[in-house]
Image 1 (tube, rainbow, N blue to C red):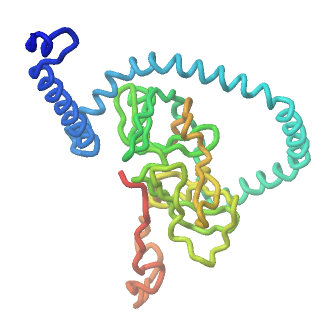
Image 2: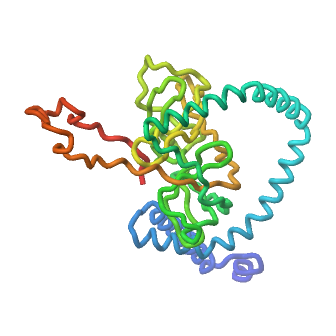
Image 3: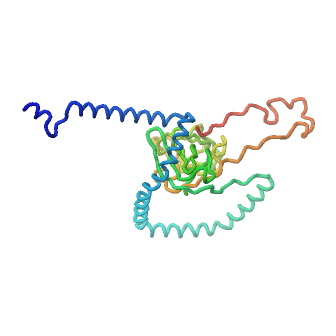
Amino acid sequence: MARAKRFGRGGATPLKERSGTVLAAAILVVALVLVILNRVEHPLVRDARRTLTDLTAPVMTVLSAPVRKLRDVDHWFAGLADIQTENARLTRENERLRQMFPTIERLEMENRRLRRLLNMTPPDRRVLATAQVIAMPGGAFVRNVIIDAGRRQGLERGLPVTDEQGLVGRLIEVGLVSARVLLVTDLNSRIPVVLPRTGQPGIAVGRNGPLMSLDFVGRNADVRLGDRIVTSGHGGVYPPGLLLGVLVEDGGVLKVRPSAALGRLDLVQVRPGPPPAPEDSAEPAALGDPGPDAGSPGRDGGGPVAPMASDAP
């Protein structure tokens, strides 16, 4: 009777208990291995991860479709409540822009004329590809998303990615039909920026949270809450002029709040990278007699050049 009660219906045998413990331990070990492999940047691991992403991209596209539809319906209903207020605001904004148009047109003509005089290359604002975000495999250590475009669409590693509101990040892995985007808020993201209002430079650093820190800005710098932050183009990672975010206060510290909708990304745009750095091919002989001090580091910019910070790969 005791044996029957011990191993009767609903009871668990020692063998079953041991099997459950072994299975749980195995799952834990596999999870730890996957976390470690995800952080390893060995070429073999990176290639395997890129191939796996390509293989699972169609499945992720299908699975994410219902979620996108539900999100679109939710946004539609939420927008109905504010449509009258938004319409009035847009009417006022349209009138203000209409009054500003002659000034903007004149400044644009002057800008083009000055660029021609200075022989400056205009910024490249093309869109190389528009892609759908099909997965957001973020975690405690990474902030990235996967899009449904890759080498087949002409994409390559390092290209910047934006949405309709601002900078999203840059491509760090590019497969045949998919790519992985490192978000600007990732801990490995360091972006040279500038405040257009004052020209104050700085470095925006991702903290794996909703806000970014702003480093290398002096205590007496002319910065204000609400100041726009754009990429400076230094470091050769991002082209200049891409809107990153605005300055906000968090616990008495100035932070950067990204303008892009990083928490609800849907459609994104992949844009050209920064223009190549100009090569100084002029030889001293072509410039005339360089003089006895031509090699001095104090003349003609010959001194040491401070290294530029850039995004971590």
